[in-house]
Length: 118
Image 1 (cartoon, rainbow, N blue to C red):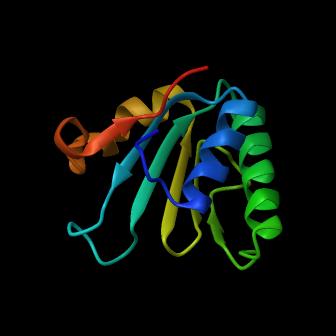
Image 2: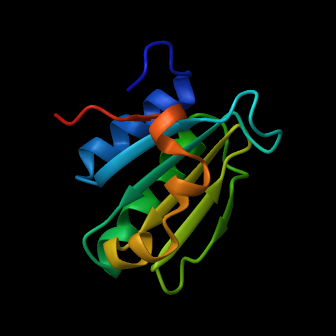
């Protein structure tokens, strides 16, 4: 995780680590986009794993007082998007993530940070 992450970013990244999310990436969007300050991208091993991770992240956001996050994709759990305002989270099954490759859109090589694995 980059130094100086916001409390929301830190809480979400910690929950992703607890839930054994794979290939977690934090992309800093400050100065690149007005839609959010950061984007977190992660993978789950299966539909069920993606759904469980999404549920846990939504509980974490609610605990932080951000219970109004918008969610898309929960019925199928191939790609779940959680819009928490300043932070947007994308959760994928690995093959769906490779197909869409949204890290490349945001040029993660130059502006993203792979979250530390524990």
